[in-house]
Image (cartoon, rainbow, N blue to C red; front, side, top):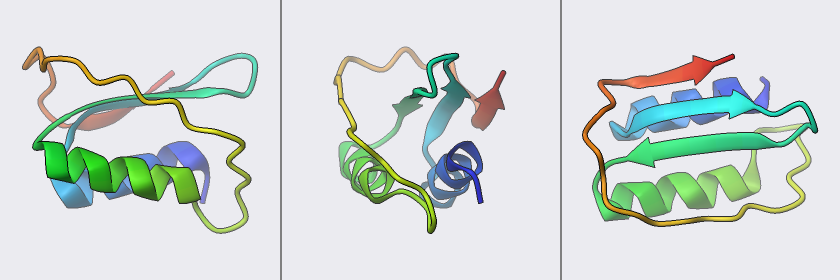
Length: 76
């Protein structure tokens, strides 16, 4: 399972809203909104990554929710 699909599955299981997308430099961006405890679980799981993935680092930035998301999607 690829990282974006992994992130979406975990976010949906937690009921977190937002998106995940790839960057051209092999980086990945995840923007998520939800209860702080659920977001912390998502962040911890993303730091581990899916089986067979290599996660070099995860940077987190916390901000106020915008309410613009209605699910969790993979953006291109």
